Amino acid sequence: MNDQKTALIISAHSADFVWRCGGAIALHAKLGYQVTVVCLSYGERGESAKLWKLPDMSLDKVKTERRKEAENAAKALNAHDIQFFDLGDYPLDMDRDAKFKLVDTIRSVQPQFMMSHSHYDPYNTDHSYATKVAMECRMIAQAWGHNPEETVLGAPQLYLFEPHQTEQMGWKPDVFLDITDVWDNKRAAIECMQGQEHLWDYYTNVAQNRGNHFRRNSGGMAGGRPARYAEGFQSVYPRTVDEL
Image (cartoon, rainbow, N blue to C red):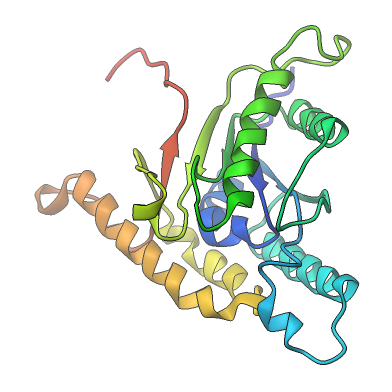
């Protein structure tokens, strides 16, 4: 029996995993997890404005730069593996074969938990589409009749990481993760994303604000843990417990 702990991140674009769950990746890597990141697209059309403003830019050049940034960020976070499906963005779309490829990845990783985007995002439908697909592929990976020679998936939690402008997305966190010990890793990964420099300080502020929420919800001034940086997540499925 393989006792290796694993996690799987499904990122619509090649930078999303950095802003939204980079701390979770680095922290769980430090805890001994093998964390695999799947980037469904590079975000080459819709999330690379800075690169497109450079002279003689092309789609292939943008993809190359975005891949390099994501690989460097994954290294900074100590991710075990990063995979690029290169499905295109704006819009992101997955046919049956692409979905089955993701199912194969889920079954291969056998994650203790998965992460993807919020259910709803009126500003970027690629994000909510990625989570719809993540839920569908999780379901398929659990089906005994799908490629029955493979090991079926159990019931990993799917955590939805924080979207941009949360008040517009209907996203409600029910988990806060202290990432103070690995903040330097996340900030280093953030700074790998040269094509979206305008988001560096924004997501630093988000992590500081969530640190405040962690402190408040861990006991506040009556003995809460002094987290400086945190990430918030919304769980999709019930959690099974023996004690509260």
